[in-house]
Image (tube, rainbow, N blue to C red; front, side, top):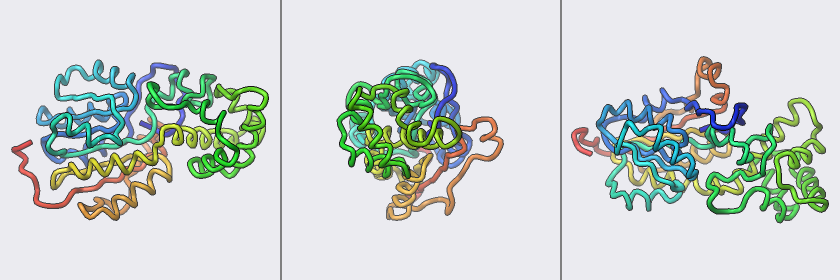
Length: 309
């Protein structure tokens, strides 16, 4: 998963971020592991391989297409991969339905996968013309287009300022309202025209502002910041003593939320004082990894018996 925008064609494979660090920090023994945002399955594959037949991975994703794809791509692992079309905010219900007693580890890789970014029908990438959807789960909820065409100027301003940390929020909101008086804003191209009218058509300013605007709209329509604490809390509640939870965040809003949760949770402790970041070799091979920051939490208590599940 990644928060960065894609540059490839639809259908391209995703390169997992910090995969070696995830395996090193998360895999502490046999048992049931969670990949709460399984996406293209890169992290899940690495986790299953590292477990050497001594555990399972429960892979969740809000995107039905991602679930179908990972079931095919990781079919060699058989029933060691349990892929579920579900929102991780409903993790507690999923675990109960599956009859899982405890988790040994849980991974939350927040953001987007490359196939989502590069699918022009989704509207995640501002560089490409497409419908302004931005939903992870296209089976329900309102699209970004539906939302911005009905939201008031004050609500638009607040969303762009809070979720995008965008200093041009008010001017952009006014531009959207003025534009939709003439025609509904339904495509990335139309939204980009509004952004250009505020910050100009060329240079880095447009790219930075567009990235923040699309981030804000994506967070809004998917209600992402509300889902994060609910999902992580459920994972921590189901971790066995000695088990770990790892979260990869890509922007400050997510990372501050995770940091505060891990610091204040009495069920365990953060493993590191600082975030784990990709090294320069990984960034050179995968520029989308640059913004990634990994935090790890360990559930304290009596160590579990590695001979049991």
